[in-house]
Structure formats: structure tokens, C-alpha cells
Picture 1 (tube, rainbow, N blue to C red):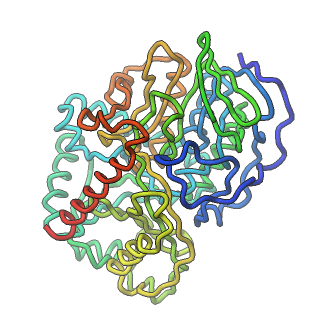
Picture 2: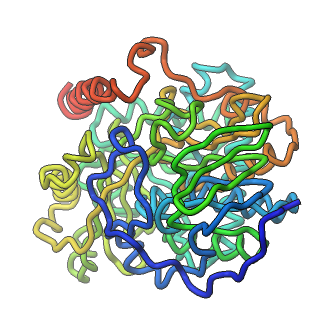
Picture 3: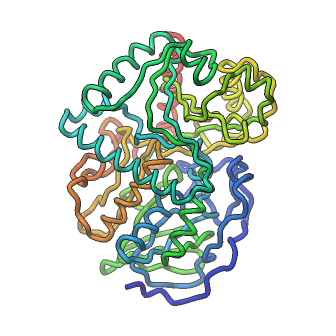
Length: 479
């Protein structure tokens, strides 16, 4: 039973109390701020006014469930807790609702989660577990599709997913992946020649062929999140922005979450902080996620001549085969959105050289767009787990603490189902699916790096990241 003191719901969205901080870094900063404004994304500029929320926490309160983070995962958890379990959660957000990953991604919803391909699932876990995991990911994609259909204002662009081989040798990989997806998992995937891609989908100058999957939906992510938020509040959840969790301790089985204006005492806590998970938030999360920056841009609308030159006949979501892949698509208003890797650190994120990498990638793929005006550009943190797969877990069965993290860039779609599964766990419901690797084991730090787990060693982790980025570049572009 929710014991929160009743209060009048806010009539409008909480206004920002501080400007956007472009240099925020979860490995360097204790928390992401308080009441900061959104990053200057295309999604923020075109989503309209944010929905009403419940204002910042204004005093101590007792609740059944507190969710930390108001992105896709946190809002979906609150929504499913209310709809499917009759539990009215309180969502605590440091800044504005959907401020982090949810308002900064590329809006690509795919039948996937984490960074691993299905052939890698087979190699890691064997056929039986890989098939069970595939069934769960498919169910997750259905959860996402159901919510997209419920909130059509998110401008869904369906049709599938196109994975483009950016070098000829990458077609060997795509042929193998297509064979695995057909013969083991039963997918109707197609391999396309460069001519087929150019004539039927898009004229990407780097194309050496492609793999086409029938499942894939592009969305306006912030409009979708606003749909989640409205529905969650209508079902009884409360959303408190400008309420960062500054500290947490547990006493007598009750979790005390300290915010600037009051302590929230909760019987269960779900962390849904994505790439914005700071060390020190909770011991189970320290150094368990490697936050990676991704840059994104959106062009001005393409002219008819530019549309003809690029032959953008598809609105499907598109990725390429680079390790640090480009992800891109044509938006409903005929702009092109494209994203890829960015800076190593938050402090260096505003350096123009990182956006230049993205602009140069756009020009290589679409020479006809060289010199086109860029109307929006931004960056944000992606939550990559150390084994490249997400976790929706209760790390200590004796504590009512849960988390859903580690999507590795595939959180737009799977976050909906992750929220549903975290809601089930919080409500005490058990399912056979929870025996899968993404549910029955906590996030772990690799043994190789046991000596560098603390925040003090974060710079050494970044040295390793620099080395990996250099290796990925050589492997993708040279070797």
C-alpha cells in the first residue's frame, strides 16, 4: 500500500532550474545535477511542451516503490507496476523527465538488446539458451510495438532494419549471420546486393551489400517517452523531476533515498539510470557500466534534388557493420539523422573534432549532402555492460534493490520490456524467462580489471578505451 502523503498534482511540467551541462561525465561527477535543462536535441525541439509532472520532492515520504531515473526504463517500470500489479511507484529524476539517454538517442527500435549478435549468443551460451533468449527478445519487441501502437504521436516509421556492409569483407560476416538467423532462429532475412540497396532502399556510397530484417521501427523517442509519462501518471505513478538521489542507506529493510528537499523511504528501489549511472549511487552499480559517448546530428530537410541524389526510398532504421557503427535514417520531415562514436570524456565532448567525425561520415555515405546545413547536434552517454549484454536483476536476493541497465545502444525498444520485467521482479512475480543470463546474474566487472574498480582509477579505464577505439578504427577501416 502506498503511504505517500497526498498532494495536488502539478498542472504543468517542472521548468528547468539550471542550464544544460555539455561536459557532464558519469565517471567524473557524483551525480548529473539538479533540475538541468535538456540537451539541445532535435527531439526536444520538436516534441512540444513536456507533459505535467508532480514537481520536485518537497519533504519526507514513505512509498512502496521508488524508481530512480525517468527515461524509457523508469517510466515503463512505473507504468507496468501500476497497470499489471496495482503498485503506484514514485519516480525520482535528477533533472527533467526523460533527460538522459531517452531524449538523446537515434530513435531506432530493433529486435535486439545489447551489443552481441545472435551468432555470438550461440557461441557464448549454446543453442538451447540462445533460442530461449531469442524468444524473450522477440517478446520484448512485441512489448515495444504494443506501446508504440498505443502512443502513435511518436511518429513510427516501420518496415524493418537494414544492416549495411561498409566494406566488401564484411559481407562474409553478414552471410554467416543471415545463415544463423534463418537456420537456427527461423528469421526471414534477406541478403541484398549493392545494386539492390541503391535502387530499392538508399544510395549509401559505402555499401558493399546488406542484410535486411523485417523487424525495425523508427520513432520520435521523446514523444514516445511523453506517452509513457502521461500513461504512468494516469495509472497512479508520480514523477518527481529535479530530485537527484544524493545518498542511499538501508535500515530495517527500508531504503532511505536522500534528495535535496526530503528523504524517500521505500520498501523496494529500481534503478533505471542508463548511461548516467554515477559511481557511488549504490554499491551494486559501482563500475558495472562503462559509459560511452555517442554523437548525433540532424540535417535540414533535404530538397527534392537531394532526395533523388541519395535515393532515400526507405524510412527504415539503418546501421552499418563498423564496431563503432553509424546509425542513421530519414525522418518524417525528410531530414537525415545520423549518429556514431564521440569523445572519450565529458570534458572533451564539446571539441568540434568529434562532431567532424560524424559530419565526415555523412559526407562519405552521401556525397550529394556535402556542405548541407546541420540544424541540430548533440551527444549523450550510452550504457555498455562489460559483457555487452543488459541485466534486469536483483543483485542481492536479501535486498529489495533492482536494476535494468546495459542495453549498449539497443535500449529504445528493449527498455520497454526491461521495465515490464523489472516491475514483475519488484512485485515478487517469478517467470521461467528469469532463468535467462540477462536476468539470473548481476552486472559484473571483468576479473582482468579488478584492480581498477574504484572511481579513482577511472582515468585508467579511459586509457583502455582510447586503445580500443584505435584498434576498432584500424580493424574497421584499414586491416
